[in-house]
Every structure is written in structure tokens, then in C-alpha cells.
Amino acid sequence: MKQALDKTNFAYISSLFGYKQILKHEVDKVTFDFKNAVDCYSDVFEEYYKTLIENYRCEYIYKNEILNQLLLNHSAKAKLYTEVEVFDSKADVVIFNGTSTVYEIKTELDSFDRLQKQLSAYKLVFDKINVVTHLGKLERVKKILDSDIGILVLNDKGIIETERDAKSNKQNTNPNFVFNLLHKDEYLSILRKHFGFTPDVAPVHIFRECKKMFLELNPEIAHDYMVEALKERKTKKYLEKLMDELPASLKLIGTYNKLTKKECQEITLKLCRSTAV
Image (cartoon, rainbow, N blue to C red; front, side):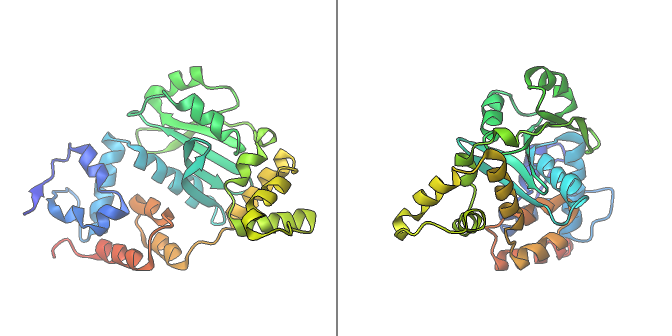
């Protein structure tokens, strides 16, 4: 039986924005009453997204707007990754284009307890480091951040505004940690390009010996090779197709590389389905 969804239950509404929830048909379990007409489930998500922008800017909203405003609106060739593991932290969003730019999100719902530790980890790998926050936390962010960290604000209308540009950090990156972001075929290609050869060792030793060679690179060169590799990393065709078909409110789902072709097709069918069914 469907249950009426209270529009003020923002936390629950935000939980609907995920590929697992769409595949499980979670939105089918509720009824909704919008002022604007909705013909399909894609429209439903667009309407709920507006509600979240106005009332509950959770982490999903921040990530999705970074994708929409800072990637899709500016460069078709750049690559965006979420939850990138660096040392003992996970970077919320990283964009690889001419360089590497990381965005650590601190919503109005978050604390700053781990922020300094996270930023220290990102300085081991990335060039431009930013914190994206809410206007209500802007003054506190300014007080606790070093001047080299960029600051962006997601305003109440859902627009990302730059408060302060990030300064370049790639000269301080650490090739040891940069290497850990690369796939085997990528670091082999880098070594072959830079040194003209790769280690002639047994397969069991190839990772260790390749890393040893990679550590001979200076930080800026190591960083730039990493940017080139991650920018050129192939995206599955069916994920590209899904990204094109998703409404603006759900674009972030198109970045989840673990989705199968069948799951992508199911998501598309679900969003196109009439709400009258």
C-alpha cells in the first residue's frame, strides 16, 4: 500500500536519490501531490529536487550541482569522480581536466571535525583543493582554512559561487600517493613513455618495481601524468548513454561505474514510466 509522503520529510526525500533506490522502486511506495503536473517518474524526481534545493541541501545536492555546474556546463572532455580514496580519507568530488581539482563538501548538516585531516590528505595528490559549503558556515570556514584552499558556496537558489580561488598545490604532491590512484595499465604506460621501458621482473614483483620507478619522478611530473591518465580513462558506452538520458536532478547517478548495462536500462525505463501506471 502506498503512503502519502509529507513534503517536509526532507531526509526521506533525499534518500530516494540513488540508483539502488530507483532499482528497488522506492518512489513507487509513496504518493505525491505537486502543484506542477508530473507525467513520468523523471518529473517526480525533478520536483522533489526543487524541494531539496529550497529546504534541505544534503550532500547529494552538492555533488550533483558540482557535476551540473562545474563539469557538464563547461567541459565535455573533463572527468569527474566521486569518493576518491586518498590515504585515510575519501574526496567527495574530483575533476580531472587540465589539472586535478578536488571539492570537499561541508553542508549545513555537517561538522568540521575531520576537515583539516581530509585537506592534508588531499594535498598529497591534488593540485587545486576546495571546500564547498553553505552561506551560513562561510565565515567559520574562512577562519579555519589556510589561504591556499579555495572556498565555494552553494547558495539558497542552488547556484555555486566562488568565494576564493584555490592556489596550485601540485609542487607539494607526493608521487607515492599519486601512484596509488593509477591502474596497472596506466602506470605501465607512464613508465614506458617517460623512461622508455618498464621493469623486466616476474609478475608478482611488477607493482613494487613500477612504484619504485614512479617515485623517481618529481611531484609535478607525477601529478600531470596522473591527471592525463584519469582524464583519459574510458567510460562504458552504456553509462555515457545513461548520463545523456538522466534529468538534471539525477545526473550524479551516471558517474557510478559499477552500474551494469542491464541496471542502466532499468533506470531509464523506470524514469520514463508514467506515474499513472
